[in-house]
Amino acid sequence: MDSAGQDINLNSPNKGLLSDSMTDVPVDTAVAAQTPAVEGLTEAEEEELRAELAKVEEEIVTLRQVLAAKERHCGELKRKLGLSALEGLKQNLSRSWRDVQVSTAYMKTSEKLGEWNEKVTQSDLYKKTQETFSQAGQKTSAALSTVGSAISRKLGDMRWDAIAAALWDTCFAHLSRAVGPSVLPLV
Image (cartoon, rainbow, N blue to C red; front, side, top):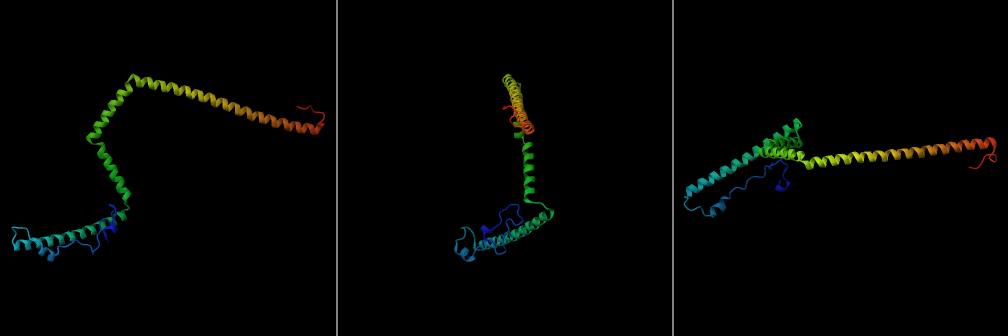
């Protein structure tokens, strides 16, 4: 698996998994032998350091394999428990929000905003503005109520006019059949 094919989802059970073929790049002893040793080291000290380096690199590979196995096992357990990445994200956000709310900066800011709110709502300008908006709202409500009543009345009148005209037409039709159209006055 190349680095482009690696799973980078941090909540994925496969995150960071390396294939068995991937290992750290080992020190090439032939190349290392060609590179000059740090001055002041004897050949024996250099060999000892190279052996220790190889051992540490081997331990790193082993630890990565163990970590990958543990992450796979963790992913399987989460799947069995029905835990998803979304649940983890929700828990992290919730925990972070709690941490923010108990932080000194948040508490000081909240306190300061409370003080400002108190000052603003107690000011004469705020009270006058609130009173003006309240009066404007009452007047607008009354005007809209009047307009609504007028429209409703007009629609009602139109409906009754249509009903009266239909009733008159029906009566006229029956009357003209009964007495004849020449007897009835033209309207």
